[in-house]
Length: 118
Image (cartoon, rainbow, N blue to C red; front, top):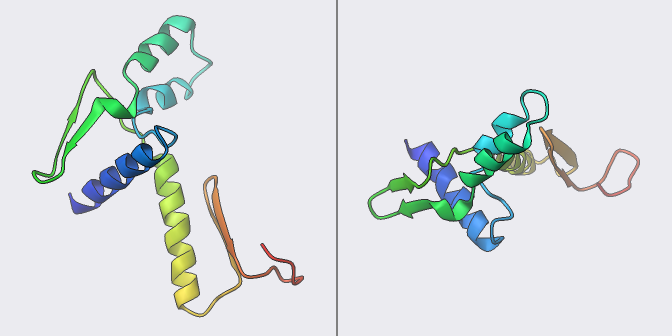
């Protein structure tokens, strides 16, 4: 779908710009932390299928190829994108002073009610 393709492109562009600092291929590691802490074998197995360089995009064909069983996780990226978009909408509506938080991502603009900057 167009929205998924846009998020996938944004995720890999950000990974390229940060040398993997924003890695969308950490799904296997994210899944491990839904239960008690993983053992060493489970952690090693999950790490073996992670790494943004294992995901290849053919942008002209709008196709993606995942190598080695890569599992995607977009939640951190989506939280940031949603936070930025909500802030843009508020600013466009004339609300120059605001704080937006979605999950762990936050963005402030203007000043707080007490006059200090966000």
